[in-house]
Length: 263
Image 1 (cartoon, rainbow, N blue to C red):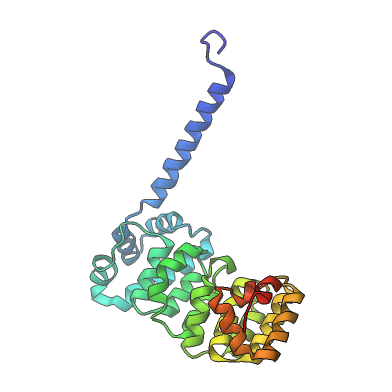
Image 2: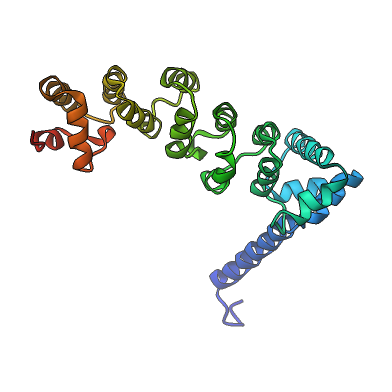
């Protein structure tokens, strides 16, 4: 290496780059299982192609792949003789991904199958955001079941919780479910509940929510006390309206925000 004038670090860098490119090509190869080939393989029972496609869709592990394949088989059976039209021709996918498989289940009006898929594939917030228009066609019970199977950081609570509440679930029922799921320590979960309680004029729930935000360290106890004092003087509806006019979220309010309000 010294005779060629090429430094050791240069050689290492080039070798590492080749490794990186090789790994990238391998990943790309596994991701490039065609959408139509997957469904044809499922129809024929081609286990290797099915496994390759699911590996490319980031569904790893034998149990997870079997569960996902069985869920897809339910869609295939449900589509009957029209499976190629409904699952291939009518869907705009070129390759298999977690998101495209979930899209297929939701497009087939099978939220139960989508829920089964979610129990085997780890989705991201980006996945759920892109699927939201289809998810929002389900009932609140179905949506609640689906988001309960997702990682907490993948759920767009700002979309899901208002939908669930407006579709008919009570604040009490949803709060109990979220408490059982141990996600109420996150302000992103509490904020939509609080906003809905304000909208519905459920002031006792608002008071409890504000207290909970203090408990989890989202707002200061001094802000809670000032909010309570203003509510006694002017009524909670008027105080919340003033905060809204000042573009202040209750879950973010500070003592300074409250002191700046004029009545």
